[in-house]
Length: 453
Image (tube, rainbow, N blue to C red):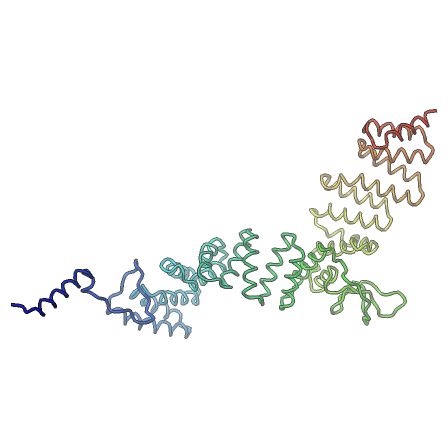
């Protein structure tokens, strides 16, 4: 027979078993501190395999950092086989393959880690580096984009920016480079790459700032100077703040330290008007001085800087020197700029000759400029008091655009000034034929009536 105390003890044990269920009878030992919990879908290593796996890993890791990569691969592969739940074993195996030059095997193991541990940033960045070297840009994005959920890290943004850029996703590339620079503002290459994106998107002030940052951080090349010069050019910063500097044995068109020598100051010895570093002409001159001479486009850009700065004589000379080297696909634009330089020097016939050459090469782009060209030349002759030449070029403009009432009005007034009243009257009638409600209708009717007799 059981006494009362024994009955109470048995009842408590039975109730405990009912409440906790069968698992309570198999209470597992707590995991050791720092141990990795096995994944739900990963096989659990046998108890006697764990010490062996740890020993293999320790030997393999030692071989890895001693530079014995083949030995490390053998040992670490055995450790992974013995305990596939340890991502650290597989990560070191991938490193061994990378150091041994076998990136394909390294990538396979790193991808395996990400399958079971998608938040493993180190593995993701490592395989991202492999895909970056191999220029597998879509794989870079596939692997690295999900990692941003777990860590905003510089290497991730840097590699993503490169991948987006080469995939022509410049908006995402810009955002990633901007984030990368926030995390690592000392990266000259990132500033340069971001400058390229800004320049291609016509954000010229931002491009100039990025290129200046790259230069300040020690990155320098003729191409960088050329691009910075292009940014300044599009900002209409052609010569910057010109200053007079004494430069011994200097020559116009040369770089002297932080100055570009534009021209000597008349009446002074060794004194030049100079453009500072923060100018298009300095940066283009520096690119040329540093060895980018073989690119015709940079010579065209330098001449165009002088043209836009209204230094027509130098621009005309420069265009004349480089014409033979300009590629055929760029000749139309070249002739157009060359024509503008000729106009600035007062060579009006040469201006029209060069403009017609541009029109012949690309009529769709430049045919419409011919009327304005005739008007510009006509106005120049008018200002010089050459009425006959003025009328001649107005007639050419009307011939090019016969349905422009404004041209007929201008020509009619010129004929009246030349006392060719019949011709003037004919032009005014054409104005009213083209625009019956012309703002000067009554004035023109009165003039026609006045000259009728």
